[in-house]
Length: 135
Image 1 (cartoon, one colour):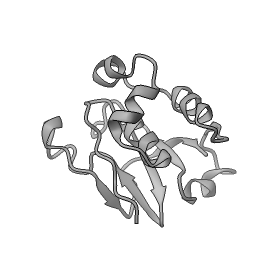
Image 2 (tube, helix red, strand yellow; image 1 turned 120 degrees about the vertical axis):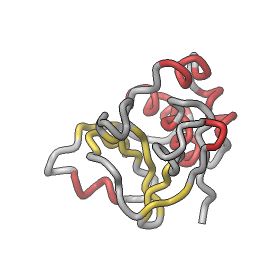
Image 3 (cartoon, one colour; image 1 turned 60 degrees about the vertical axis):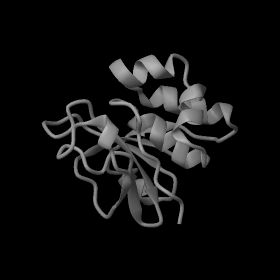
Image 4 (cartoon, one colour; image 1 turned 135 degrees about the vertical axis):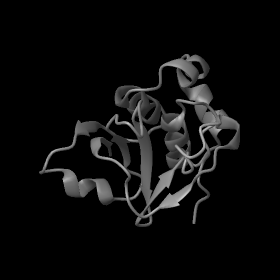
């Protein structure tokens, strides 16, 4: 089983998920994103940016809004989903599907809001509504 990747920045879940799919560490994945350090601290990333990074690494991917037709496709390995913004996730959240589990780069959020004490791990269920899928 692959090791989960911990997000090192407050809005770095997209980077951590990209790192997990690519099999690299967070720091190396961060370098693949234009203005990655700044965006991971202030703005976050949209699906299009993650797709662009994965394509540059020769991975054929695209993203879509999740509707009934493609809902079942989110349960394949290495699929990244974006959880809708909510009270629990005010900026939304990215997770990756792997071996029938979801790799969560900040599994102890919101109980822990200190980025220095972030823990990643695998969960059985999504804790929000997925609205975008990268596959």
